[in-house]
Image 1 (tube, rainbow, N blue to C red):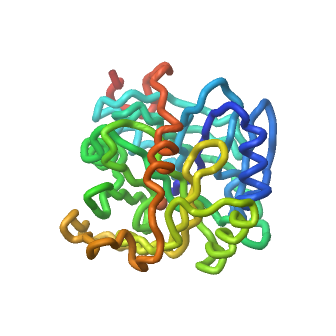
Image 2 (tube, protein in one colour):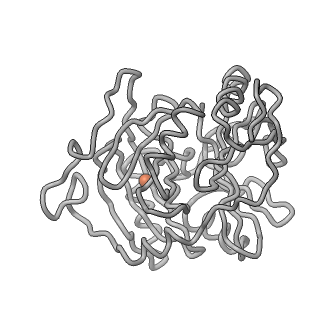
Length: 302
Ligand SMILES: [Fe+2]
């Protein structure tokens, strides 16, 4: 199971895509019907899409999996009574699978048969997505739902977040204890720490400074630098996230504390709390869609 892509809808998609290619460092894979599909250097045909629309929202968070995994997921989703529907992807790579709605209305999409492409080279092109963080009304309830219905696994808990894995990476997802549902941030995996630092330099050339970072996190131990993109979302350069084994014991909030005035391993940067709090509310979830029975489900979700 891999986190492949995130699909956002927003006004000004062309300008947002131009920022993500010309400044952030992604490559344009394809543009059609008002949507911009952006890729990294890895084998996914795209990892981030920006689609023109009248308001900002998260369309889907997309995972790729095997047909065996998909069938098992469909049964679990149905057994847990979550709203879902079969889907065929129209985006680059295609693929079929289903969409499922989680507690705050966030849609997760699982695809099989999604095509891959030849990797490309490019200095400091992100490789792929590292993780997505979503704000939750009740992060424990959402994490419980993804464990029960999707087979994901909580890898750590802090005072602010619940981290979740779906493969050896420490986390592909995390849910922030925000008290409301929205898109918190998207993290792009960079080749190494130098690539993160050069990314910070590249944004500095465009008059932008990090809203948090550079630093190194506790859970997952990844290096990070967060920015607020001009289109309103928080975007992160990340690298060197830990891999965990099946027997990894999730830490509790009391296991992940910092000394006074520290908010990361290095202690060299502050958080712009105001800018982050505004940006973390910019993209919401939508519940207007039509659930349908899944073909492999033993029971019909209500
Ligand atoms: Fe992150």
